[in-house]
Length: 294
Image (cartoon, rainbow, N blue to C red; front, side, top):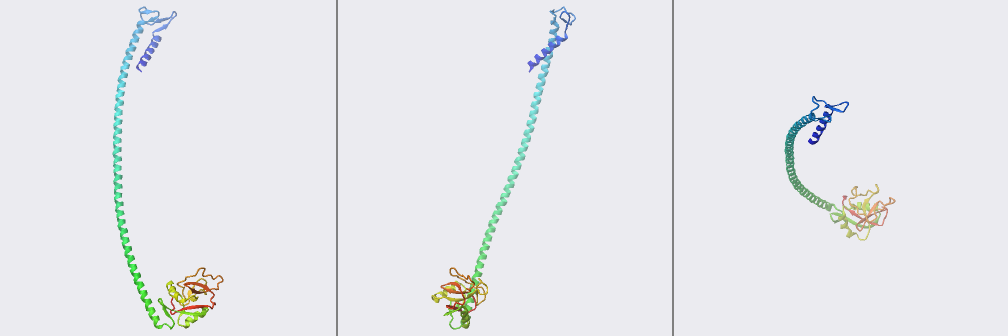
């Protein structure tokens, strides 16, 4: 860069001297000095040109020195600015790191606190579940005790009812299970069977459950027996004639009931299963019960 500057100044100086110290006359270039005869050769002023060039070189050297000093000063200023910027950036980076570490520590502390709370909640939940299970087991045991007591009372009441019925029971009825029944082998229609049971002091039978049905089954032989159950008043709703309530136990044979024409409204029993047929059918035996409960 300096070499190019020197070359440029030398060229500039030559141009100035060429234009400033020479004038073009009729016979060529002349030197514009007081003593044009000294050191003059072929219209060129060597002495004046040498002096001027020396001044230019001196000025160039001084300019170079100033330029060098300026460059040193700029370099020092740049280094100082760089150091200040670097120091400031390092300080900001340190502050950012400190703030980030503090934030992370706060988040970690908060998470640890939440974990402690969650652990306590889990422990409390486990204790509560254990307490609930214990209470549930206790209630179930108490409920079962109440059920057992009620069953015992029911059995006692049934036994008392049987004893009362035994006192006033009509002849011909026998105790089968917990109730009194009479199996009558007379072939009659349903209305006749219902009337005959009333005449005997009882009602056309209706079983409470399958245990009663199974208890009577060995005694009935290979015959059909009328039961005190029908749906004459409301098709499909079978009631007991003894209690006038819905029949508590119905065990239908396969395909029964099959009252397609709404004419089979009375129920008969065979071999532990029930079917519906026309109430006017008169070739069926019947079973009476001594009480009017079902």
